[in-house]
Image (cartoon, rainbow, N blue to C red; front, side, top):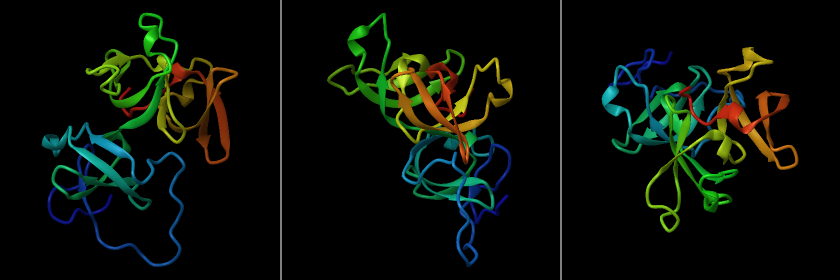
Length: 201
């Protein structure tokens, strides 16, 4: 774990301050399942800095040495090294599908702003002209855009994959499944309900 420069130190569920400079030479390649630079996030599950939970931030890069994302906290303007478990990505361009109770929303796009583990639903924010309040929507009713980082869940034939991070490559309209990258050179097809765009399961 990297050393924090002032502020809060590292640790499980903690926040590591932004460390010193990086070594020379060509940079190593970040893992396929890390959050991309520019991804908006909400801080969560922090134990040593619980007052920061709920703060909004943006991913600036990935620190391969510590395995943490370098995040700029938009509330205090500081940079922190955070585990992916402490970040809820804000997913723009998600699309509603297969809603039977409110079919008027099918095909509409919006933003995932959170996840409710106890209910197994996203907090989904529609454009204001469609719906002014966030709706609780099941993953089976949301098509995630490419490059969304997800966690795999609910697989019975390959339970060893449950809980692992992966990345959406695309949604295959013909099969109604995602093409999901689960390793640097391996993709699989998974149902909508078998991936969740949140570290909270």
